[in-house]
Every structure is written in structure tokens, then in C-alpha cells.
Image (cartoon, rainbow, N blue to C red):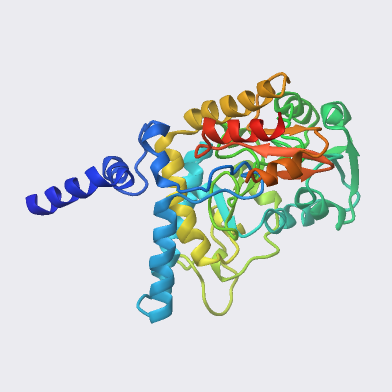
Amino acid sequence: MDKELRRQARQAAADPAMAWELRIGRPGQTGRVEIRDAVHLWEPTPGWLNTASYGLPPRPAVEALRRALGEWQRGDAPWFVWDASTGRARAGFARLVGVETDDVAVGSAVSQLLAPVAASLPPGSRVVVPEIEFTSNLFPWLVQDLDVRTVPLSEVADAVDGRTALVAFSVVQSATGEVSPVEDILAAARANGALVVADASQAAGWLPIDATRFDVLVCAAYKWLMAPRGAAFCYVAPAVRERIRPVAAGWYAGEEPGGEPHAYYGPPLRLAPSARRFDLSPAWFSFVGAAPALDVLNAVGVERVHAHDVALADRFLRGLGLPPAGSAIVSVDLPGAAERLAAAGVRAAVRDGRLRAAFHLYTTEADVDLALNALT
């Protein structure tokens, strides 16, 4: 054993990423790791400012995926070896947003996880949504026989009244990076008995979130959680669980007598008593990559990620002569900016004619300066 430890120590001395992984310890362990000690887990080409479109995976996630793909190719592993990552990722997301693991359901997309919530509302129920809301948190309500009202984000709280059954909004808006007035919306909803559904896809991973404050909170994992596309999570508060009909229930939502998961064959209906009754059969390899990515986030700590990301976003805004916005996503109106950035090798996005740039824990000051030099 001593010989193996010495071998690992020698490898770590030449490989900073290996040193970081040894210091963190076993998967799922929560630590307090400085970002400077974790950045070696990424190998981005300079100029990636587009995490709001998709995040870049850390090395442990990529290696886990490569192992699983090799096992699949050779037929070397039973499916439940890969499926174990689903439970590990579920637990990692629960830690990230401060909830119990049993209160988290898994699926592949935000709209997929919201569909049962929308289908459970009585016909004609009023739903209030911001007018710039991403369609994954809008279409599930619109396809039902519901009274959907869209208003400017700043007016959402005022639009909630005694007729409102549910208010749905993104914690951080995809198009603009604006952090929603969560406190105002929650206060209005609670005062009027309305359910609160939040989409944290552009927030979880860089913005500290206490999911217990919402009735339902959904999150696609391929952005700030840096997971493969095809993994998504849904917190369902125990107090509202019985009000939602699991209309997409399948084998993965089942539970055999004695608490064993997954009812394979035949009646009667036997769903898990936890939020797992809303599970949708997972895309295994997406969760194989999601689990180690969440381990990394939890090891570093979302508070540290928040400070790092917002500092870089504010540096970018200051360089353009603009005030800080307090978000890891910035939206600026700069004609021709996308073309100038592309020529400099900087990858960002354009939304509604405005440049959208996003800054995450693998972003450096050099990335920011590269973009500023191209723009100024």
C-alpha cells in the first residue's frame, strides 16, 4: 500500500489534476477547495464565455464517461453499474440546493419534469409567467387548458393575486442574465396561496439557492452543472407532492414492497412514496457524467463559485464602461460584437440581438481580457 501511495504522490506531483482529486478524496465528499486548486480539471480553449449555452465538463466527468462507453462497447458491465450514477447525481444536486435526496426527481429535460405539474392543475387555473421566460417553463403551461398571463419580470409579483393558482419563473433569466426578484415573488405567492415553480437552469451551480423555499424547482444540468445534456433534476416539496399526478410514471418511478426500487412487471400501481415517483427513466451516460461534475461543484462550494463568476462578469462590464450587474451572465447591446469576438476566438452567444456572455469557474481573467481587447 505504501508503494501505491508513493506512486500516486509522484504522479500527483507531475499532474495537478491528480493532486486535486487525491486531496478531495472519495466521490461525493464535501470539501472546501480553492478554485485555483481545481482549475486544472478543465482544458478549455481560451475564450469560452458561453456556459449559459452549455458548460464544460471537468476531467473526472469526462473520464467517467470514457470508462462507461468502453464498458458499453465491450459489454463489460450490467446496466445498474451506470445507473448507480443516477443516485449519486441525485444526492449531489440535493446537497447543492440544500434539500433531502428523497425530495429530488430525475429526468432529462425541464419541460418533461414540469409537464405533470401543469397537467395536475384544474382547467382554467391562472398561471403567471414572465414574458421573456424560456419556453421550457412556458409551453408546459400553454399546452394545458390554463389561463396563462405573461407580464414583464418586474411586474410578476404584482400580477399574483387571489385568482393565481401558480407562478412560474426562472431564478436567472436566460436571455438577459437578470436575477429575478425572488423575495417579492415568493411573498406575493405565499400571501395569495399560489404555488411557486422555479427554473434554476441558469442559476444552480453559480448562485446559492435554497430550494426548500419553492414548491417545485427544476434544473437542466448541462449548463452551470457542467453535465452532459440529458440529465435534469426536480425538487418537489413534500407538502405539495400529493397535489401532483405523476402522469408520466414508468418503471423507474415504481417501488416494490419492502422499499426496493423499480417495479418491472404487472399491477398493482406501486409508486415510490418519495419524489422518485416523478422520476423519468434516466439516460444513464448523462448521469455518469453528471455525478462527478456535481462532486466537483460541491467540493469547491457554490459560494466560492459565485464570487469568482460574478467578479469576472463585473470585470467584463467595467472594461466596457458599464456598471456591475451582480450576475454571472451579462447581456450588452454592442453592434458587431459577435463578429469581433468570433474573429478573436471568443465564443459567446447572441440573444434578442444582444451579446450574451457567461463566466464560470473555469473562466480566467485572461479570457475576459481577450474579449475586451476584441471589443475595445
